[in-house]
Length: 146
Image (cartoon, rainbow, N blue to C red):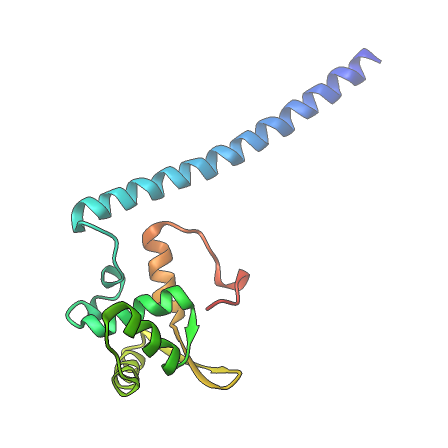
């Protein structure tokens, strides 16, 4: 009987130790990601989409459209124009359409079917680069957002 109790306790201790190892691995990954973010912040003075999408660095409207799509995940031209107007003070749907076409040609934005027509989203590659930069271990097979 005492041997059985001892064996059970050893088994419970092994299980607890394994859980601690797994927790430590997660904490270690988070610490590495945090240090990477601090390093990026120190090197560039902030975290911005143009670190992942340098093609939009010199184009404030395109950069803001990419930010909007990061925030909204998916949006049509009118929704993007409305959000852009709120952020910049002015926006036209024609300008938004033209910028979306440029971003689509660069592979930054993709057109996806929506309930009422075309909507736009960031390409999986852009989202993947962003998540890698900030150290988020998210796999796309686990999400339908992108």
